[in-house]
Amino acid sequence: MPSHKIHLAIAKKVNEKLKMDLDSIMLGSVMPDLCIGRNHTMSHYQNGKLGVEGTANPDLFVKHNKDKLNNPVIIGYLIHVLTDKFYNTFAFTNFFIYDENGNDIGLHFKNKDKLLEPSKVKYYKQREFGLYDKWLLNNGYVVKFKDFKCLDNVVDLDVAKYDKEYLKQYIIDANNDIDNLNIFKKINLSRYKLTTKKELDKQFDLCCEYIINYINSIY
Image (cartoon, rainbow, N blue to C red; front, side, top):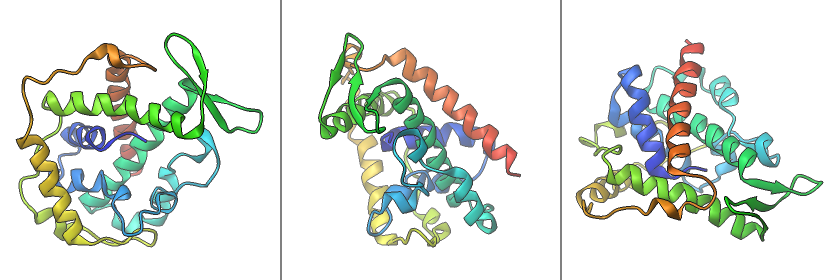
């Protein structure tokens, strides 16, 4: 799944259209990964299948939380689920090599295909998104939380419970990441092994468009 700075940057971009409380939208956009117990299959409403069929399920999320969609934190949560579905579909479709049973056994690198252990497949996928994560952070696409008022909008879901003190510390740490930026630090774009910075920029924009269209369709 995409890393948190991608989630936060997409939430900010999408909220330029939604015009809801940005802190609440951003907090919600990382909450599926921060629930007590960290059961990601449950908190992302996955159906447990492999590959694209097992990605986060926004339709199931909406079905179970229709009465909460006026809460900006819950809309942020939906943005996370949609972002995961979009980026994981992109990755599973374009990067992964599968065996006859649908298990991932390797990756399509830019220069050649490689068969890899599952842990290495996960590592390279996360590494690719991690590089883009750092680029977004270093170039101002991720902004600080203004205060802790968004915690008042946090509610437990049937599949995800929350410790507000833990979420408060997450906000502090996220703001510190921005405060501690080294403006001279540059990301070597040639380090992308599966795709390119240009392609990830394109996917970022397409993901925001996908999310806005989906949210418009449920109102």
